[in-house]
Length: 440
Image 1 (tube, one colour):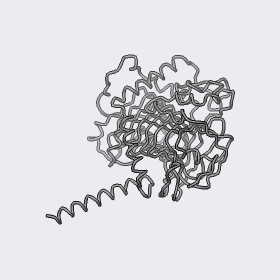
Image 2 (cartoon, helix red, strand yellow):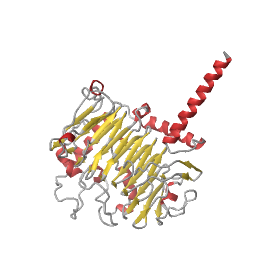
Image 3 (spheres, one colour):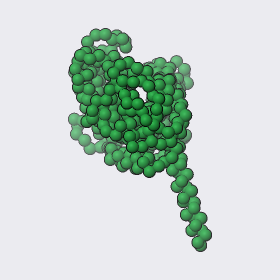
């Protein structure tokens, strides 16, 4: 009897150790020490607190904001991306700040402008301004003051800006601490030809107006992640931006392309996320929302994907979803080779007011793709297309019963503008050429 108890105890210990090891490897944490274990627990608690039990309420609130914006702005997108006229803020996020010529004096106003599931994200709103003056990235353990790495590992809230145009070649993944805003308005800043940005087990991060491209796998090693901790990291994946087990994250007005793995990954129970106003091109696996069919904890994931332009050279995963709730709103899908929106493990996907332009290939006209499930299973998944514009033979294969409308006022339940407006709403997606004393 005693030997059986000992065997059970040994089995439990080995299983627990292997489970923790697997999580650590997925997280690129070579040693899941006390600090990382505490952060993971804190991140899980923050995710539970941020989780909205009635996500339809938030999708309808976002729709209301779009409705108000469009009813007060009749300018059409017809001049192409090289617009040089007066400021046109064509969607409600941009209207909140873009046409203010004093944006450089009131940078932190940006934190009031996020909509959707990431609406509570404040980034470094209550911190000091930190000016990055040095594009180097030489020391992973003791970052040089004035560098981006030195800024993001600080323990206090910071609003990070850039003194000039620069190309930052990261020698290893950039680990961003909580309550940080990376705000590249007023400069042309590229994260390129090195590692990418990792937002792991933290909260309240805003990433704005960066070019992120040609990110590659880096070898890992000892890397500082805060002023009081560093640890051994395994090799990075080559993602442009990886959001791992984090809460309240807003990724806005980025131009991204040609990274070795994904452009944006949001995984491991990350929630309260908004991805907006980005221009994405030249890539295969564009966005991954949930990394494993086995991780049922990802059902807490709630992500808004709004006003993005999915452009030339894209192949698939715009996004590819698992488990959670995903509001895909007023995006412009002008290119894909395989499919646009896909997933597995019964995610809820609400597609509203997007424009889907199918490729010439007759085998790739379907917007959607379900993985690893027969029709008898996926027909119950809630995938809805409401007001989308389908062009060149595009079609969205819907599934599931009627969308569950929870109790909210009739004022909030306003239908999104149709996909005919998607081109206009995404007209200024990607990085903006912002200059002080002029609207962006």
